[in-house]
Length: 564
Image 1 (spheres, helix red, strand yellow):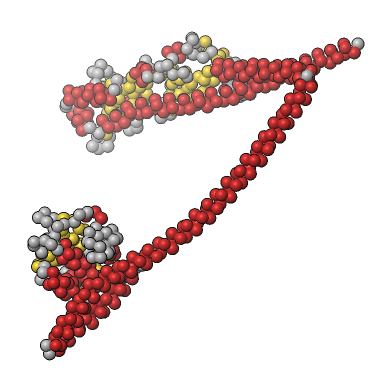
Image 2: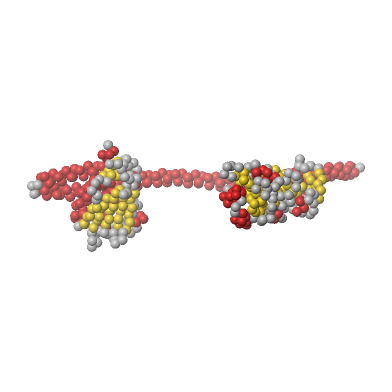
């Protein structure tokens, strides 16, 4: 009796488990079917929208062609006086060949065809698209046999009235030929329900349709239209008022049902396997206990491994933080090094720029001493005056170099290039004389006004002339030419030396081809900064026949007298 009760209890549990497994499998079937149908419908809507856009685009190409032809004066003249029918027909044939149209027509208001690409249509009177076109609107519509779709546009006369219409017909079978073999059944019907375009020939004759039970709020149609049309499908429609058609698609329900059935069977089988396993495990509690012990041991082992990993990660985090702190200190040190480098560059620039006035002061001082020895105080006083002027010039140079080093140039003012050249020639006179260099000046008669500063432009010219004198060292012909250009205004310094080794790098700081101790390589870099600060441009290049030429181009300025 006890055994019989135990068997009965196990039988009840077994039956209850079967019912629960069936319910779960049924729920999975329903959920899968619903989700699959929703996904299929969403894809169908997307496919339908793409197909509709494709057809609309194809047909609107014909509309655009008709609009283009309506402005042709040859067709307008034919509608007005009836002249040029052959030329118009040739134009329509050529247009139809290029555009792939079935036919292109020129129609009178009464429907008579004056010219056509095919020459086979005598009249289109009474067509809906013609009536709409004669009222001044764009007309469209399918042919009675549903094989062509016509777009028409009115041709307006000089007085604004409608003279006729240009109609472009597209072959619907040609359009739908590229859609054959698509997985979804897509077709387009007119207001009467007639199918004009479809990727299934079976849809041209209405199939037998039965209404099935709805699923997830979707109407399911049962069709009998052949092997290439689904037997169960969801019908979707999209009105296309722009071409007067309705796009329709049949979304096959079969794949969704197959997927739902496969998942339900898989879940049911899985539940049965789980039930069998539970039955076996219930009879082997000791095996389960041993397995639990092994699992706990593995969990403990994994926990220890995780703790070790966490400790290692914490160490890596500490190392990374220390590296970031070291990087921050290194960046601060680099900033300090950059500051010191900038200070050194400015000091070197000051030394280089003051070298020329100091050499001139030394020359004037020596000459003044000679004049005093010769009892010529007037000439000595003139040299001392020049020394005072050069001292003031050195003060202005220091001020300008400080502003240049801080990238804070003074504003440009109208400056006469004649005064700049005169100052530069005065400063470099002694050096040119000692070097035995012949100087040629090409200067205009009147002043040439530019935007700049006399002191800073004198610095630029003195540096260019000094470099030109150095470039001629050791050459059989030592000549330097200084010129003032007027259109555009600027300066040009040319030498007869050996030329530039690397014209692309001559304006880089500390670039120099002179011997060690003969120069710092900052003169051209500083000159470049001064000219750029005035909105000008300085270039250097080699010239034919030997030597190099430096050109300074500046912004023109209004003369001081006019500005005043």
